[in-house]
Image 1 (cartoon, rainbow, N blue to C red):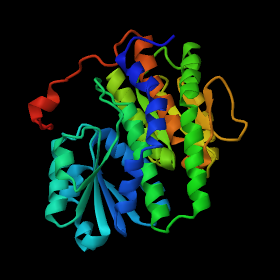
Image 2 (image 1 turned 45 degrees about the horizontal axis):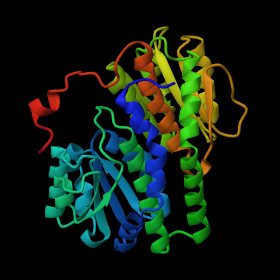
Image 3 (image 1 turned 135 degrees about the vertical axis):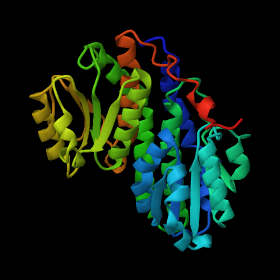
Image 4 (image 1 turned 60 degrees about the horizontal axis):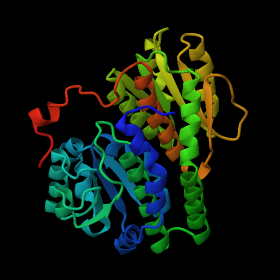
Length: 358
């Protein structure tokens, strides 16, 4: 039995929503219509920016282009490199689930003023972003009446993956066999998202990581460095506590000194060059605090009370499964300690500083 937060409804919709996206002809047609590119600049806030960090290398690999990710402010004031790009072979991708983020719209407008084509990715068809962009990918995931976004983030990940794959294949950058293999893996993964959700819920019910949560750290590597960023953000939004993220190698460059017996640490581990480092870090941290959790997707024999083993999808580093697991944790944990994950917490801030447009 799941909790009462509206966020559960959105998480439970993900398998169906992402399954529909796999058959979205408009998304594939948009990717095919984009001209030959040499570089892509992704601009986004919050969870959308985290998605760009997850997907940057994936897009670069399968599209054979240079890919850069920027927050809107950084793009507008700290991105001189775009001035060196060929306007005909460089595209700016602006991502906003609502299409109303003021900073994102300003950055996209600047890109257009500089002569670059803008691809918008949004849920809302009649939004400021949809009117500003030269072309749009629509997530078709439905609205989310919650502070912390879940299905919209997962839809953004999949939209970027499908766009990159279709662009690469249609422009002769990607062999048919690889193209089909990644799509097949995505289909298999999406068809098991409900099972992944239930697995994490059942694990949480055993009380392994839900009694207390403070001084939170989420650590990852590879594509799941960006997933660590998103997991940290989700748990910060729903628990309303300070939290941190880091790359597993960077953790040893100062952040490790702040760990104590009250710390809670989540490590994201797949079969990669960093598996040994993540496993060693896990063992070390267990000597300091009992609030350590490893989410592991791989073919190894890593197990234990504080290890939650997830389905392994090597071509996408299980990013959708890790994302699902962290979304479940971000709702289950606050409810377990008596909090509403969607409770009011400085909700008037964005209106006060006017970071949204109507």
